[in-house]
Image 1 (cartoon, helix red, strand yellow):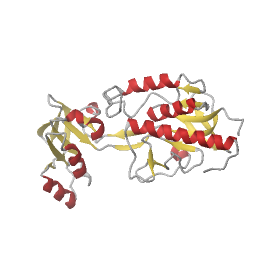
Image 2 (cartoon, helix red, strand yellow):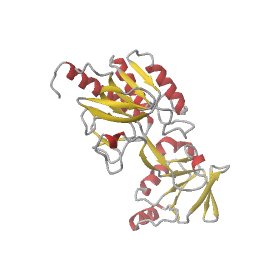
Image 3 (cartoon, one colour):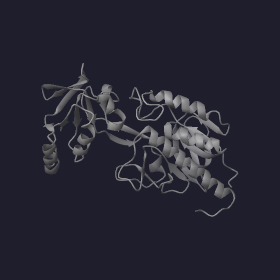
Image 4 (tube, helix red, strand yellow):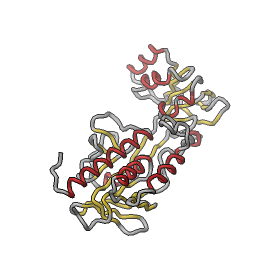
Length: 310
């Protein structure tokens, strides 16, 4: 056991994954510091859906309740500051904190999330998280019984249409001026889906939901599903040289372990090696935080008593 560390674990990120990880560590009486700021991926969303017991609650309400839970555990400390860097230091890690002393820890659990970049369409950003959304599971039901448009020209459009078909009164694909590949176009035609190819020049709220300027022609829908381009919200995976997926997520195993021993990742910044993409839901982020923290507890105990790794 390294007696020269400040904490057992640094949890970097105070969203759902990080707070659940801290709760798990606190209940196992492991010392941890939770580092993070007040910026979260789901800030644009006014309500959070598809989370048992919190369906329809504001995301900030869940975070406040979660932090209150964690603060009951005396082995957990909060430092509401950003992190500048994370570096290995022998068998430990040095976490450089913005405006505070660095901390030395035995394990690092990254829960910093990702940031979304929307298509460059005027008026779209103020509607995101409401009548404009990227996840049918999180926001699809709120668009029920209304015509819905899906913006994009990617090959998984037919699957998105199939997801939204039981919810929306009609589904239209907007390619935004891009061309569909022949197979996708043929599949959408077979499904009877209307496809509009005009560029999308602007968006604004309307009585139905959203009004779009399709190259000079107005079209109104109950909601718009868009694909965002996302990226890591923090540089720590790159600093630590962690193995990444082709999509840019931190690759983890089933216990949240990254390619660097002692570093874990949880939440939508991470992707299981067995999956084609990361999960991007509040509930799965919380579950990932619990699993990663549980393995931190296991590995710390094994290290403390010289037990063989399983």
